[in-house]
Image (cartoon, rainbow, N blue to C red):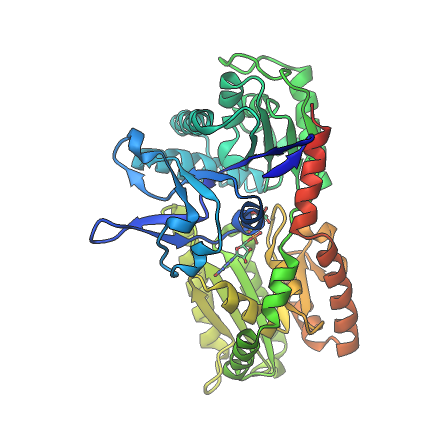
Length: 487
Ligand code: GDG
């Protein structure tokens, strides 16, 4: 429960995906696998504390939409691939919203990822306009709204997350004129020149303006949004075939950068098994320095450019051969989307070329892991790494950089961070880079590898203090303060 406006209220978080994906095994039994991603990292600690419900797609593509596919499941009851422990510690409910194969393709792959993700991350040349995909996106967003309507009580706080569900507030407001509905955007809100490319900008603005609050990670995203709203209100042509609901509430906008459960990561980094694993990783790396990259596979994360920076560094500084080892963890994502398949192939080829070019005896500069690791393993990797390379070409926030800092309870380590990650506004003691400039990346790696220990420690202490102070609890409290301010 969450205390808001003098009452204890149930929280219903709504996002495209649930924190667990469902699989059906050979015997027809449901098996759940923990999913990884920034939204899950940010929101799961909140659900664990407040209980409540998390609504989203469970990962199964159905043949049609049947009533029994919508269901509420208690996390403590499900069988997960990782073993019982993963679920027994939690006790919130998940509510499954089904998607068909066609909807998965049009709503998720084509519209959410192909159109919105690309455009909102400034890759307008990759973004495409597909009317059929837009219609399916609206149908699926309406389905989410109808399911929320079915299970919600009047006093529940409905908190809709991210760009996959831009149209859900509109359909939900029609069904529930007096419900408290909030929205948080986890990706950048782009400049007006980019946003205006979208033929459905009015519908999207009209829909999210049906919410009581809208939250952003960065003040620039709010500035861009304000400009879009100003033009929308000035030139208003109507929301094209939709009843105008905008104005039914007085929407409050706010900035609140999401964070991490600092204490949980810090505590994990001090655990005996994690410290042992850290030692083992350092031994296995068998080079004086370990550099780490952790990213979901995505062109916006700048993995390719980072590898080219690494290649330039080794071309210009052959004396660095055998002096470091670069471990790149790439988390599979959007594996059905053509652009992502092509990106993976390109990354594979670049890594092959770099290793072929610089390998000596038993040493090769890049170790590449395409998959996911457990939370403990991730913390061990972070704390073993002397340098973290977090160089997205554009990122709403980026939690990996904050996790790297939280895992360094030894107060050591250097963070190289992109100027285009939302996190740069808060993390002042990193080494900032232009992620499009491979020269800049090469220079920053060189600097990071040669930074004196006293400077490393001074910077790391300051970064830790900042992130420890603005953690996931303070993020939630700030969001709730903004919910209080809303009508
Ligand atoms: C979106 C926005 C914004 C990664 N590999 C493993 C694993 N992870 C976890 C990391 C981190 C998360 O995934 C990735 O978070 P990011 O924030 O870096 O990126 P997105 O997934 O793109 O998230 C982003 C975020 O939403 C929140 O608002 O910051 O800008 O794009 O937490 O730890 N976790 C585990 N194993 C892995 O192998 N356990």
